[in-house]
Image (cartoon, rainbow, N blue to C red; front, side):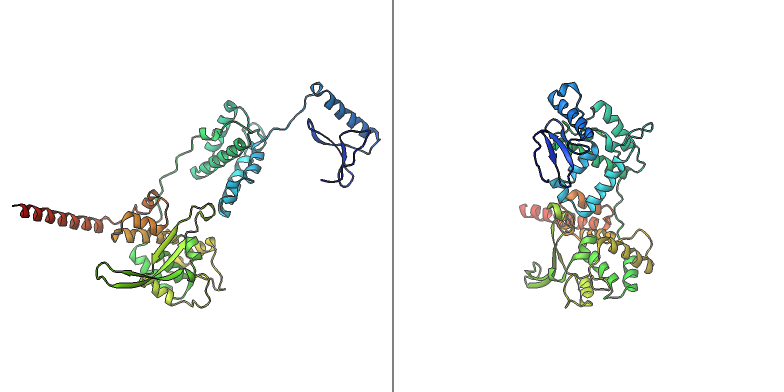
Length: 385
């Protein structure tokens, strides 16, 4: 920290770089000293600190207790924070700022950032609940509640408080998710007729439509993730070769929550790929400058491409992922196959994508299965006669 010459006549006095004088002691921490050695102001300040150390009970030592703002600093130093994606960190910082800068109550200028995090439960809980409930948007209320819980978790880890009071804050229920709207055939046809093969628009559309990836996956899938796959066709007993795309999903990659996905390249997607120059390698989807798209840029471009093709609002890149999910489910893929194709860790997430399935083809398959089973039972009974 700097030079530490000891002054024999002034114990606990240290000199920092630049000549600044400080008084250091375990009871007081580090205190700045005014003036120079031997000056009246220095002597007065030193004597006050010396007496305080000699008889601490004579003067109340004010120790700053950790605040919610301090807890946020600790949160950003944690291992959990290091695992978050850039977008997640930005979201937590944004909602932490909303909470820390919010006034504790209408009749005070004090903010939550200044409040001691070990404030008594009966005093702080009503204020926290009121703060969360004050947000008109249930999504924002939920995010602020999550931030408060993480601040308390960091404080508990540092033993600044005994338990996480945010667990006692009831979150406002979110409205049920409508999911992303699958694209009807007429919109798919309109988009493909307007945007030519080889264009970035058609390439992004093809990857989202026939690979079913999220926007991060669509932007990052590269040519070296394609490979041939040989297998024996159960129907013909012949060896077939298909091309597959294999990739790790981009979502949750920093915390080990991403999934490995394998998708067969269908003829419709092969047509899209054949129109591209793969000699330069890199990502399949490229900007006009030969660079990968960012996730946000891809979302914005897709909105423009849809408008150009006359697609009404509400049909998105992620909606094509829902289209992909519905198609393979309606085509007879078992639930586990749909889950794996979408790169979901549990089937409850997959079910969100299947809310708008066309029940008719599945009803036909169910009727066919029932007819086959009834015929089997009849044959068994006939054989027993």
